[in-house]
Image (cartoon, rainbow, N blue to C red; front, side):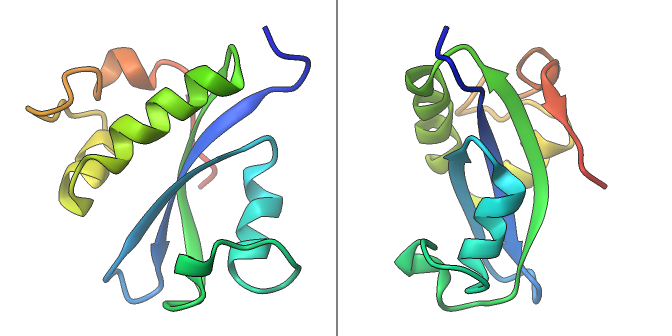
Length: 108
């Protein structure tokens, strides 16, 4: 296991037109970067600000494990990502559902 805990997070724009998936050791601080409140946000999130944090999954055993989950979640449509957040399985991502969400930490 890595020395630090890694988390997968899902963002959406305030107008709900787009979602963004990422990993971080501190998702709430990373959200500040995405929203331009501090340096370091992804270029793709400059448009659509402000972003809202929909959910956080983790902690993962390693950065690599978090990156694999990130790649899988990024492969889903926005609607499938939201379904995953609600604990429903997506046909193209059978891991997405209750079993995957056992480590989910909702922030709302």
